[in-house]
Amino acid sequence: MSKAIQYQANAAISLIDRDKLDALAPALDKARQEVLDDIKLLDSPDSIPAEKIPLDSGFINLPEQLLQDAEKNGNQSLLSKIEECAKHLQSETDKILSLGIGGSYMGARALFEALCHPLHNELSSENRKQIPRIYFEGNNVDNDTVSAMLEHLQQGTSPENATDRWGLVVISKSGGTLETAVAFRIFREALESFYGKNSPECKNLVVPVTGETGKLRDFSKQAGYERTFPIPDNVGGRFSVFTAVGLLPAAILGLDIRKLLQGAVDMTHQFQNESFGNNPVLDYTAISHLFEKELGMTTRILSTWGARLEATGLWYDQLLAESLGKNEQGAFPLTVVNTRDLHSRGQQHQEGIRDKLITNLRVLKPGSTPLAVPKVNENQNQDQLNQIAGKTIPDILSAAFDGTNQAYAEVKRPTADIILPHLDEHVMGQLLQMFMLATVLEGRLININPYGQPGVESYKKNMTKILFQS
Ligand code: PA5
Image 1 (tube, rainbow, N blue to C red):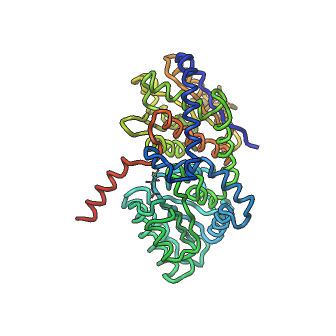
Image 2: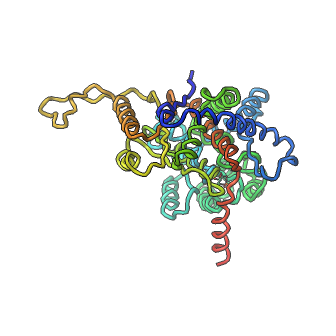
Image 3: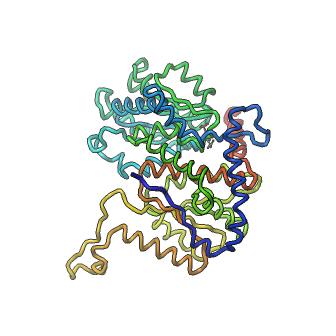
């Protein structure tokens, strides 16, 4: 059974006035109550105060609701339908192309990188246990990557060959995002030409995930796709990883989506019930907020250790930036991957401007057997590694972690740690929900509506005007 994730901030706390931290507790409790009251407001949309619109707090209870629905309605539940669709795509395809951008992309990528075999797409079909390879597009405007993906998919010569078969998942809540819509047209055409325009595959190997209304919803109805999945109105894009947006790609990849949701439920319960000091959401928010407001630490570094959590960090960058970067407020999020980035950004973190709070994201146990440094004959020991022969890669990572944090502590650079016992679905469910709850909690604490992203609309408006009027 998977364990709970921990947040530890002793190193940071030693650098601030403890009274200030304690004094924040009532404001945090008030903000927590507001976050929880927001959920109830969704029951009567007409009574939502203007300043709270948009209100996308549906993500908080969604994991529990989905699990309860599955318990009650079995095969007819949304989770079972997602799992059925995933099985269908697993048995019918060797490659899935997932189209989407921002919140309609980054959560699935985070789950893929954290939980699947690091070389998943390179493995043979047998070693993947017939689970399709996954690729992501529609998350940029880049002629070269789109062309390369088309070439890659068109290498397949015949739908008769199991390894040539591919399918499309297209994800857009609004249904009108240009990057995704353009990619969908291009890849849909390629799919139709591969299987034949009137083939059953054109209807059963294209799966849209979209809001209840919008251009993609309209098109899907007209096209008659056999399976489409909804994104609830009251769940915002970057908070949608526990809707079909994240769950369908995860299920296609063979991940246990019920365990993922259970992790999120456990974190929500901890957030609701535990007090300051034993509540990762409250504690993480308190430290982040205090260091920003009291000590000017406006850059929040999420320092991931090992290679598998980079996409999780990028998902979090988007979450924090789009949620709190409003009214000329909001800390600057930055993900680094160590030890890789110790050789690039490490210098600045150690000696640069004092505007950074570093939160380490550390996994205690690797998913594979620890590899040891081999011992070699003395005449081949020019690298002098015989001294550490027998030590494992996790031992080396641990030494790097301790050494780095000790170096920061020596010059009073604040660090805190999020400790993950290992990587599995339950742990990732806890972590993603922790970050989402912490983000909305901080929004309420600093009087910023964490939902919506009005600033992003400006570029979209201009781009559309330039493109459609020229
Ligand atoms: O958080 C958000 O709402 C955004 O990042 C969206 O997810 C992103 O813009 C994609 O939007 P859509 O899913 O409507 O295509």
